[in-house]
Image (cartoon, rainbow, N blue to C red; front, top):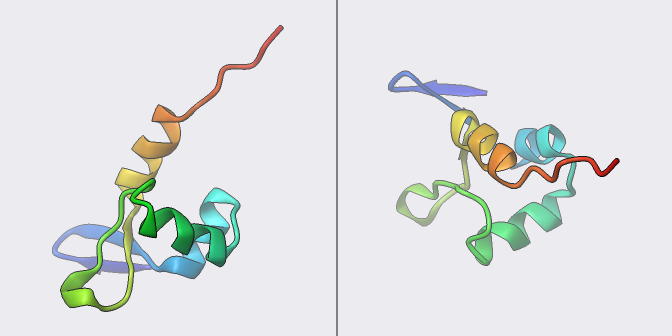
Length: 65
C-alpha cells in the first residue's frame, strides 16, 4: 500500500484481494469504468482505498429475509 500526498493507494493485486475478484476481472472493470481508479500518465493502475470502500457500499445488496 502506498501513501502519497496523504492518500492511501492500493495496487491491482491489493485491490483484487481486498474486493475478492481476480486481477483479470479488476482490469476488465477498470477498462469499462465500472470501478473508480487512477492511471497516472497512462502507467500503472492504482485505487484509492477510501473510494473503493465508498464504491463497495454503493453497490451493497441488502440481504433478503
